[in-house]
Image (cartoon, rainbow, N blue to C red; front, side, top):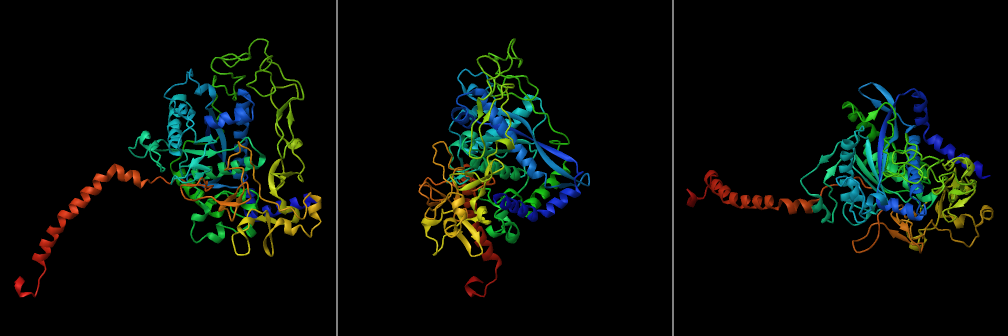
Length: 578
């Protein structure tokens, strides 16, 4: 019964995007271009995985993060397979795909007091737990320049920082999910003004000094399938800004086309506020986004950018960084370890190295016994066990997916293909929706899970009162079903809460819809996605106040001169002025 409804859901997606499918079929032979992304994993994020997910296992931490980043690349490539772009130079269509240029992790080894890392490397600054959003963007821009000059490798198309920090909005009041310089694919380091980094740190408002092909994405990796999906959409959103995409709600006059209602499938990827990824349009681009990206890529193509390659850029491996990369047999750091030498070779008698995967013993340098859990169970995936014949933990595949009828996110969603993604409204063959503030809807009911019917947006528990389906999924008539809320202490507010009131707020632990933006004295966060707004008038006034003073003095001096000439040049019938 549920599989039928799931097929209906997929059919709706296919119908909405039939034009894209037809275009894809007509351009299957279109050549590929690749944009390589260099990821920086900053210390707070690395440490949270190290302590809470990898149980203080250094190599398992690196492997978990490594796998997650490749998963994000796979996701963005699946999305971009549906779209083609046009080259004015070659007069042909092409498809854009992404690969990983390299992964730089700021680990506890780099941040230790006896670290031998080059002190001029901007990554060392990421060891600090107290960095402003402005400073992080500056450091990423500086690192993109440092990496390309010191490594001897081809410069990456984009450099992105992966963090668990809360990023401030440009006005210093709220918090954003990510930052990126718009339309900066392949851009070099650009010093925007003469402000010093120290001066920026003292300013409350947002004013980074450097611009480059960089971005920052906040990720809450260790919590649930639900938060993983929201983090993935954040990455898609910020990456699209780098490719020239603007927010859908910035296109005046195209609201009907690019800002669909819930009845029309919900918001697209580039809507300025986050979404839960449960509606049809949430994982697709609007025509407005496609137009803005196409325009930018056509302009970029005129300059024949070398960072967009015609083949996959080989991942740049660095022996001694403690990260097992392509081309290496093992990597246990610059001094080596029990199982691996400093030259990234297995030691004599060693069968494997724990740097290769979670299924190798760091004590015996042999494969762990079959049955040891190497990937813990989640809402929608079963635990994965080592098989005793390899150091690698088996990859996540369909055999580990829980059934599609499995409830997740505190019984408010259904699993689908191993992801906590489908609204329980699909059990009624309906789309999900959010109740909005009105005379008919009390404020304490805005966090009730609701479904879109021909009569409007109605709470799920009302719809199931007269339906036998509620018995099938274990809900009782009297239970009020609220949007998902995760109260685990390490769960970031950005990813473990659900939106409410048309995405204007989030549901707190008391099931009340709390506004995202409020005054400076409250600790309310904003989930607004933000393109970079860099003008800081307060800082400009402090720096150039003397120009304003000179301008005012000149005006005062010119007034009597102006009056004198007016007196001489303008005729008058007054006899006393003859």
